[in-house]
Amino acid sequence: MKPKIYLIPGTMCTALLWCRLMPYLESAVEIIPLPPYQHASPSAYFSQLRQLLPQRPVNLVGFSLGGYLAASFSTQFPAQVQQLFVISNTPCALSDTELTARQQALVLVDRYGYKGISRKRAADLLDRQASSCPLAEPNHTSADEALIDIIVEMDRVLGESTFRLQLQTASARQDLMADLLAAGVPTTFYYSEGDPLLQTDWFQRLQTRAQDRHIGLLPTSGRGHMLPLEKPNELAVHLLNWLGLDDLQ
Image (cartoon, rainbow, N blue to C red; front, side, top):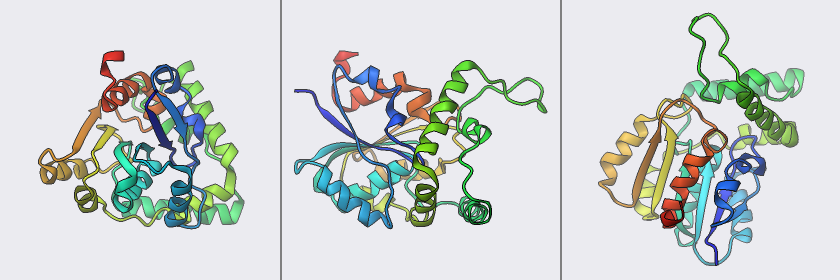
């Protein structure tokens, strides 16, 4: 029987987030996408998860916002999580700059309606190689455009109501470091070293406090945030190792 992994997507992401990862895993792993966060509170989402997940402990994966939610769920219901894999997230409070940006985004939506994510904003989430001229636009490739298409499509499907809910009810976050260490759930973090959306010094503090207790860090080069789309092969290798299936690579 194949091991199962349960995956929580991030802000304005659907199960399409995993489309480039699945071909690397589906022969060895049963992949079960969980629904995106569309709730009035994280506790309401956790109630849904507890109905969807089996009674036995599961292998739980979360990306970005989904990584924070997966980490928080693991601290509150550690008996339901066998091990946790967090992608592109530092489970702590958002910076004042990010909170201000979110508030401004909601004001703009109130005033003008939700126009959806722009292709430029979607491209900013990727680890693109900039042109040698500092004033020039980054050099897009056809591969970049394909990934941007996926990001834009996920955002289109979820739309304004989900955008509002996610920014309004999932932005007030707590630092989960102490709770993760206390819960004892084996946890692995996979992230880009230069991802501007992360507080990478948080990982350094975690490593100091963890002292090798059930915590693993897997930094990767670059600044890309959308690692399931950008580095599906590398992510798949890490997930197979995490599941103890490294002999299948």
